[in-house]
Length: 460
Image (cartoon, rainbow, N blue to C red):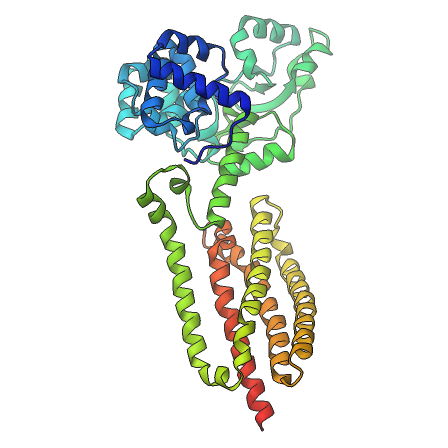
């Protein structure tokens, strides 16, 4: 993985860690690590070689299993499995045992399936049951993201009883952003804030002051949809229920931030026509394997374009100057198509693209494409007319092709993410090489077809 640039303070810490590792000063290294937050220690790994990283992992584990687990949870997900491969089985069990069920599940997901199964079998019974339940959910859903450490109260409980219960169970206070209220069947029926407990008389029952319209998600709700709901309604946490409306856990805002970062990274990599393996691997072969599919598509599109040019060779020989404006047409259509694809794909990702508004949006893109196409076409035609006053055909062909190809490219760009979503594929794929390669070929086709038609028309 390419390391991020370090601040002066981070560089000093990195230099100190490297020096202590080289000296074999385990005591000094443990003392230094104890003064740093887990996220700060996790940020060192991209800058260390394998030998240094292994020494740092071993020191963390030997110092404190809980601290080591929290550090490894802060490491970028693609890197964590490589680091955990250096940890002994007994240490893995102790690390997982030290974490809340949600974090324990996240750590186990980094391990090979066989290793994770063995670790779960060695856990204490109560912990293993919770972890096994969480592992049964798809990791990209609310069930796979949630924590089961949630503070729950019955609806007939009074405020005084609720406060006393909170005080007795202080370990749950870290997750008590909201108080979730359930009925006798453990179904979610309401929610109230900690503030409500302090502003009502102690004898008031929770069912009399709770909010009954509770925002919630199902265990199988996609993590991106969960993140959108938390962001849209400014929630600190959101409850997760099963098909019978039984409360099974909550997803907190810190989990959602991880999802947003993960989804954003995935979208950016798809726009570039590569994947996460390429980003984190130092192997040349891994990078080549990740990039070759879309590079191959681009090469194929280039070969198709060359055949189109060959098919219109007689047109090109009749007016050699046509070749000079091919990059302009291709560039305009490619840019226009990518802009439309990016806007629609982003709208879909943010759940802003409603089905009933699709026709209106596509018509809008057509109008925008026509306006931009006419402006660019007139500007291009005017330049050609001034630069080459004796070749009227060239100006008409360049200007007309710019207009037509931009309109077609923006229409294709707007439709591509929608088609991909209908096919249950990621709409963000349309913002990468897919649109670029197709609209490039489309622009060349329009350019030479129009040029050929104009040459024949003027020749008559």
